[in-house]
Image (cartoon, rainbow, N blue to C red; front, side):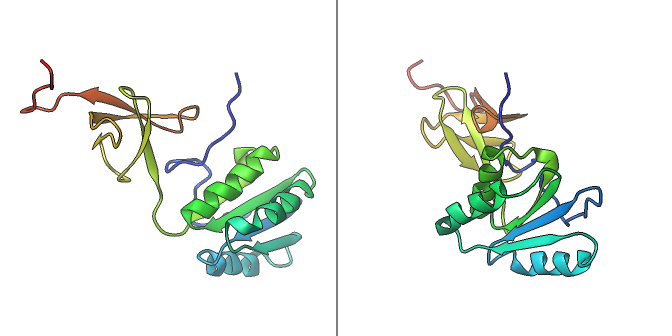
Length: 172
């Protein structure tokens, strides 16, 4: 069974600096206001080496324009996303929906990343601190040990319920 790629805090598409993929025929750079400076710097760095198309967005209202741009590209195009977390997830998702693979996308997140944990007790997803190893489920208040595995299907790290030392389970 194939599961489409999902952008998460440790995704292989997230980079600290864009790397030109010279084997590609064309580059498309998409940025929001937060990532504009990084996108502009990258495009000036690669200017003249390969055709480049840039799109600066203002957020969710530009969804149709982003989709149109992605769908109009030929095979062999490399996509670069420089944006805040919410906009990067939106652009990444539109790209995957249009058929892009993780190898065709590099993402530079401006600002904090978001991390989610899937509770194995109540089957809900909660947002947690970026480096947290344990968390409390927002829904059922269970203490969760955050596993190392990210579930593409559940869109979160697997959170295993446990009883912390010093706490008693209610109803026992």
